[in-house]
Every structure is written in structure tokens, then in C-alpha cells.
Amino acid sequence: MQAASDIAQNKATSPLEARDVVKVFGGLHAVDGMSIALGRGELLGLIGPNGAGKTTLFNLLAGSLKPSAGTILIDGREMTTAGPETRIANSVGRTFQIPRPFAEMTVLENVLTGCQRQSGERAWLNIVRPSRVAAEERAAVEKARALLDFVTLSRLESEPARVLSGGQRKLLELARILMADPATILLDEPAAGVNPTLLEFIIDRVLELNARGTSILLIEHNMEMVARLCSRVVVMAGGRYLTEGKPDDIARDPAVVDAYLGGVA
Image 1 (cartoon, rainbow, N blue to C red):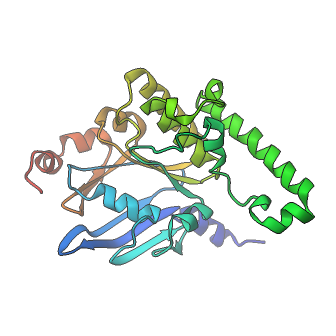
Image 2 (cartoon, rainbow, N blue to C red):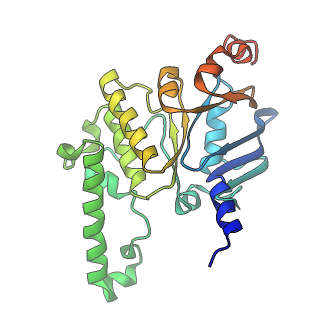
Image 3 (cartoon, rainbow, N blue to C red):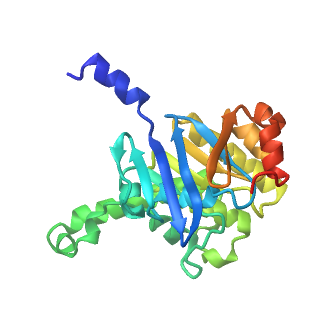
């Protein structure tokens, strides 16, 4: 039986944490000693002016980039140099500001690409365990259809992904990453290029996922959306941690105002 102290420690462990992370491109410190810890079940906002280093930090957390220095942990385990495939295997998924679905594949097929650890990926099991492979494939299709229903794209499941609007592509990408059952999701500007009606729906889906216990780190320029979604906001400027707090307090913080007006590059 797990000791009470161990259980308490597990609850306190951040599902995703960066400690003193640095990323250097040539002589430029795009991220310069940044630390951030996402709380379990938290919906945390990450903001900052253009050039603050948010996207670079996001890519470091997602495994798309490797840090020049510092440590990245998932559930307390070091994953500093692990790639995206290892991150998703450890329940950390990410979306992109500009989704790029497989344009000629159907909407349903695009969602199915997010499925993990299928027996059919191993050629020999298709021969010796065909019924097992078929059962898993049927379950995957059922799950993908449920996720398309969650993002209201069911009616388009047989259409090629190229017919989707920008906002619908963001919803498709969300459904695809949910196929992997991530406990933590990195959301990269979900409001960018989305019409107001669809944005309201995206906000609703994000809140629903968070209510189910998913930990979410959100990069977003739409401050109204950040204020509606996040109870805590971390601010970056010049590749470094600037401050953090509640959205309303952050909006009035002189250091944050100065950073957005150009006082901090």
C-alpha cells in the first residue's frame, strides 16, 4: 500500500515543470533562465509581448526544441531532452497556432492519426492476432467519432480536412490530440483567426476539458479569453519570468504594462 506521505507528494507534483530553462539561438537568449510549474488540474495562462520567448518556451515544454540548459520535468520525472513522441507517451500533448491537418485525408482519418499504442502498428500481430487488431481498430473509430461529436464536427467526418475553416481545423486538432488521452495539454493561441461564435464554443470545450481534470497551459494574445479561462497568469518578457498573478491584477501591474508598451524588449 502506498504511504500517505507518498500520496501527498504525488498530488503536489507538477504535471509539467520547467526549471531555469535556457534556449540560445546563436548569441540570442530566446529563453533565459525561465521557470514555470503547471498545477495539477490547473488552467494556467502564459502571456507576454511579442518576442518575449513564449513560443520558444512552449516548444521546449512540448519537446520540439531541446534546451541549452535547465531541466524539464513531467510528473516529477526528468524529460529535458525527450522528444514530442516521448512527451505524448507520458500524457503531454500540444496544439499549434496554425493547425496543419492532412488535407486530403478525411476528418475522421485525421483524428485517428492521434491514436497511440495500437497492436496493428506491429506487422506480425496483424498476422497472428488479426481479431485483436480489428477489435482495437473498431474501438479507435468509435472513440474518434465520440471526439468529433465533442467538437461538433461529426457531420463532416467523411469530408477531406481541406474543406474545414480555420476554427474548425483548431477543433479537429484538439480532437486528434485527445485521441492520445493526454493528462496535460499545451494550447497554442486557440483564439487566433477564429470567428467570435466559434471562439465561444472553443472556450466552452477548453473549460469542459479542464473540469474533467485535464491540466492546461495556454498561450494566448486574447486577454479577454485569458481572463475568462485562467485563474493564474504567468508573464514573460525578454525571455525571462516577469511576474504572475490573477488576470485582473496582472492587467493593472505597472511592470506588465511597461513590458507591453516596450519598456522591456
